[in-house]
Length: 337
Image (cartoon, rainbow, N blue to C red; front, side):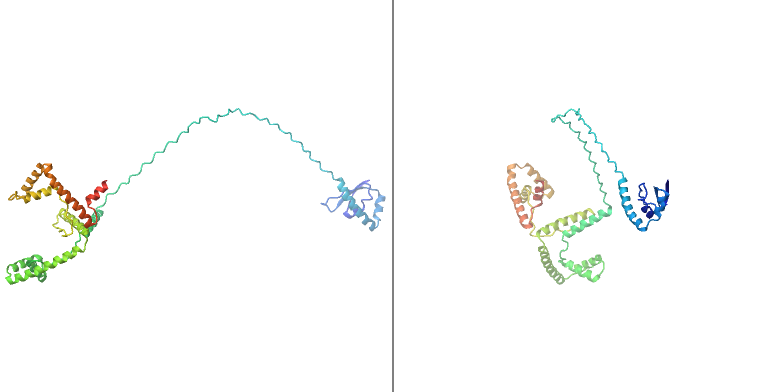
């Protein structure tokens, strides 16, 4: 008879050698194992009366047998049969493209069209305002006045009448016109002694003025005096254009280089020195001299031309030695060439 009796693990190990069928090792998931066996009732009763020692020896043998049986019952894994991969026979196809010639003429690439440069923006200059123009004019006038050397020493009264006028203006402390009328009346009523005294004082003042003026001029270079005279001429012209009755006298300096003269100026000097134009006005005499110069032959003009050339050489040398620079005409000629 075949029965399935629940036994514990220890009891199953004791009964394995009594059974005619092999035990299978129970799984680890359940603590209560079911062991199938084929035994009779007699065998069962005998098993229950076995001693504890017999059970222990049997359990040892059962452990070894169970592990051995478990090892033998395991089926070996089927060896994976590797199928030899069939080698694919690749057939190389010949390219049907025609071989290109090495020396084939390459087609020239089309050059990209050059981009047209963008037109430059023309900046329109704004017209200067009235205030800007006025400020510019003031600055130019200030520069001219600085170059004109207007800080020359004050002149003392050098005549008898100016002495009376200055003294009367100081005492009267009024209008100049009233002081001038009073001074004129006093001057007419002067005695000989008072007039002599005033003349002597005026002459002394004139000498002092000349000495002070010369010292002031010598304190500046000849080139500074030359530039000052140019600035004074410009100031006088601007004052005249503005309707002002102001004139700036040129500074007298013996060191100033005289301008070179022309051939016509030498001819005029000779003609006026001859005395042929005595009693004739300057305008009429000038017209006659000019007519004679135009009618003069080239051979007759040669002496005057030679004098002009010599005077020009003198001017160039003196200008360089006195002012330390070349004349403006030479500088302009260098710039053009």
